[in-house]
Image 1 (cartoon, helix red, strand yellow):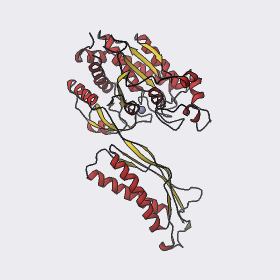
Image 2 (tube, rainbow, N blue to C red):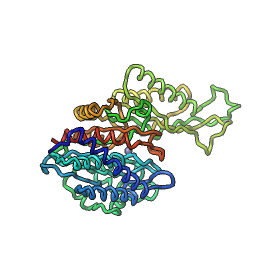
Image 3 (cartoon, rainbow, N blue to C red):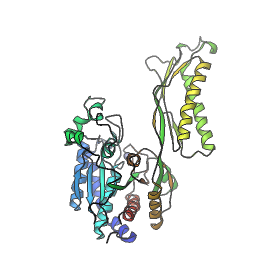
Image 4 (cartoon, rainbow, N blue to C red):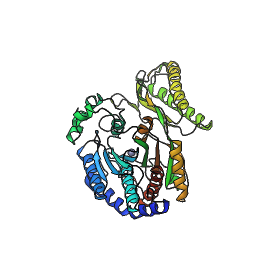
Amino acid sequence: MPSPGPGRLAAAVEARLPFAERLFDAVRAETADTVGVTRPAWSAEDASAARIVAEAASDLGLEVGYDIAGNLRCTLPGADRGAPEVLTGSHLDSVPTGGHYDGLAGVIAGLVALAAFRDAGATPACDLTVAGLRGEESVWYGIAYVGSRIAVGSLPLEDLDRLRREDTGRTLAEHMAEVGVDVEALRAAPAAPVSPENTRAFLELHIEQGPVLVGEGIPVGIPTTIRGNVRFPYARCTGRYGHSGATPREWRHDAALAVVELVRTLDEFWIEREADGVPDTVFTVGKLFTDPAHHAMTKVPGRCDFTLNFGGTTKGFLDDGRNRTRVLAERIGRERRVEFDLGECVGSDPTPLDPRLRGRLRKSCGSLGLPVREFATVGHDASIFARAGIPAAMVLVRNAHGSHNPDEAMDLADFGEGTKVLGQAMAGLAV
Ligand SMILES: [Zn+2]
């Protein structure tokens, strides 16, 4: 029997929820810090999480191994071992003092789905594999998705020696070798392990990291697109320090008020675009500060540093945000007698998720009696697989209190619903 059928699969997932809870608890116990969990990629803690998940997968009778980057792979063999596989999973690493479910939920959901297939007595037509990916967070090396980029071959190999921990100066290659990755084999590897030829789809379950599902009382969401972004990480405005009481307006070169005018006008631009119906846009000024070595209540600020971060699902909005910023900085700088240096502008294009896979996920929600809620999401490993030409989609699970903090709160029941949606979509693909 290639597919267990929706009812049997759902019941089998339900029966495996205590297994999932034990696994969450075991990883948490091993990688806990004072209040949350800390698992930097290719650290001893990240390796412990991989070991615990690998042992659980072995106990389930799955084939367990690691790819050339040290990404964990747990496979339920299909009837045709040569057929392209269905891949699921998420990341094992975490931010410092992160939450219990970011990333790990997707790895454990994959294991539960595979266990449910086995428990229901089904043999999928192709291999079903769960990946425990490394290095999704950008904690030590300043770039994200390192494990999935290596898996699809989109990380330049020189980055293994170029990327260094900011605090210790040790390279990515050194850390990988320390937890058992054969870096020389990786350098010599002729092909990436994951390609459109050997992988028919990548499905990632992840906790929602924003407030939508909790706010609307819906357990599971389906992302439409992974937002792209345009970012100015090192922008600054330089004016001239002056005495706050003794300097009339026309003599001022106030860097702080110039930045405030810039960000207020960009906020209006964002509001206008939303009113025009441009969907799923965000705009954030995460840093805005005067220099504590020089600033004072009684000084006109001579310098103000800030960051700008536009996110959106259309390239048009992102291009407009970038251009508008440059034009405004020019005008406001002239009018206020200050100089803007916007610094490097970085970003990524939006990544639409696969419409057919999203259709399968909507159908799964429907057959489980769950409402269908679709909206854009933030960067995840799924975007790396999508950009490599592998059809990719995601399932988001309701989670209170945001993410990347120890207060992440996902109900096991919601996790179960999300895993059923995931499992059913995988079942539909593996026939
Ligand atoms: Zn994550």
